[in-house]
Length: 367
Ligand SMILES: [Zn+2]
Image (cartoon, rainbow, N blue to C red):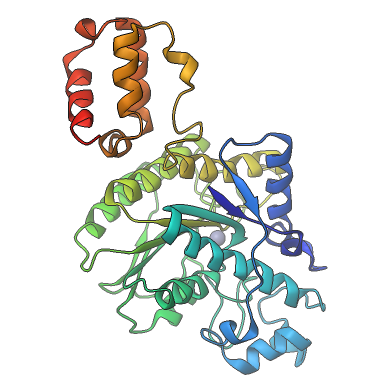
């Protein structure tokens, strides 16, 4: 799986979690790699492409730092390195979208920046990476793009940029009211007030999206970790790390089942008194691990071959044959791991519980 990152993501002088955490996560991947992830530096976006989404005068202000009110309108202190940072990070989001169209799944360690407007920044968001990537995907031939925004805050900037464009749908599930907007049929905003409603709201929204027509050619996933209960900016009490892990599994499994290519980016998630850097990095790594569920070849998407060596060779071969089949991929990693564990216990096909036998037989029909 391609994961876009370059050191230009973090060159701006302004130091905040948003302008630094890509490097923290990249460092963590060097120290503790996730097998199957290939980091790659993206081509920077061009000014011309930025102007497909943003007003040329605003683009110029970010390039030159003048006028200062406009150059600093997002809240980020402007310095000359803000421009290369913006080109690199948004280049990464666009590259992830195009790689996902080709490979099925990809990501960038840059952020979606869903508060940025047409003619100004807002909420520490300079340019709207989600919209820039959606435009790149539509230009590359996608007909319908879904922006799934699970940052704690609302994506009012994205909403304003989509306007009446029927090719882009936004599904926003938020727990904090900043940048709220009035939803519509194609731009929904589900506001969650209680932790125990969070995952059910997401599941319900995903189910509704299955009825969308035409089917989505791409999902852009803004994977905010700021709903986490320990996050001072946006967190909701009761939303735990394991709930966010489950959320990532739901999103990627849903994309896999619907056969929708997915490009993910980081979003909120801020260190503070109750959230240290390692924990924050761990939260964002949940998104990477979730995305790896769509990769049939690389662990942890499939258990290691060695886990199958002490079952009967015949059963081993049958499992080996179906491991990358569409049926098994659609069933999801969890189900496959149950099957492998059960096979390890059964040792012979005859003793494998019938529900798993049925799954293998169905998978054999598509290989
Ligand atoms: Zn946020």
